[in-house]
Image (cartoon, rainbow, N blue to C red):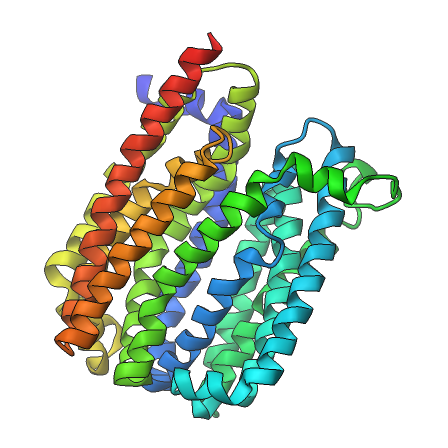
Length: 432
């Protein structure tokens, strides 16, 4: 009886309800991934998967800076009017940067393909700016949904996207198991999500919609007020995304797309706990901690509880991969993927601490620690690149490179958590 009362008490809390809504949608999405991914790996093989991984790596590196990370600021203002101004600025910046990126690809197309060792997907490189544009617009819409606490819409999108995309990969792959199919479906993924959001909110009250009737705002004023995002957060996110995805590009360059396929599968599968719980907690945690900070509440306790909870949740899945990686990957994904399990047992250490680090990263904007986070990301990138250089260039050993990259990353993520907790405690003390 006490247990039932305890559970009911927790579920009545708005924060936990929102986490459960987002997590339920993400859980179903990840369940679809778990079911369909072993089929996809058997249909397409490591090389095709590696070429898709290279395409995704490029997208992931450049997408966060499409709007200079300003979409994150949409959640912060007290008034919807100011938030809509940020939305307008984000859209204009995204279009401008994507046009520049498209021109860059047109001019340096041959050089890019040669460096990436990806002649088989040379024409698909032109889909990169289109995908970045669609992803940028999706992120703007998503942050607006988070601001309006429309977490049920986010949950529905989380379910429909993988159902359509992964379902398409399996259905088409039965007849045409080529890398081009994987890349094309990946390129339309976020555009499809943005379309679903538009369809879901069209019948809601006006206050929940993004409109641009109020055109009297200063572009310069918005950028000035939220300058920390383009000045500190955008470079930090770009560097972080670049170093996290650089192994895929370097593995393709030094060892070919098959090695990149092993790494991509390892990262994708180990990202499931982060997508399932970490991302859901982050989406709900951000407005929660922003509200707590505005009310001068102690945010350190929120960070500690969230980080501790994620550690307890992640220890079993990540620990299992560290111990049984190669055997698990051969069994689940097919005999061709044993090497992916070797990669995964090292990546699991890094992924575990990255998973636990989620609340600390989300808190950066609230505690105004973008400058520290940028410095941390630069230091992290230096050590990650050092690990990759020693393994790939000096020893020509792909597994050693992944091991050094992952161990150094994990240790630095742990340091990041400690520093954010200390900074949040100081902020709370100063506000008393």
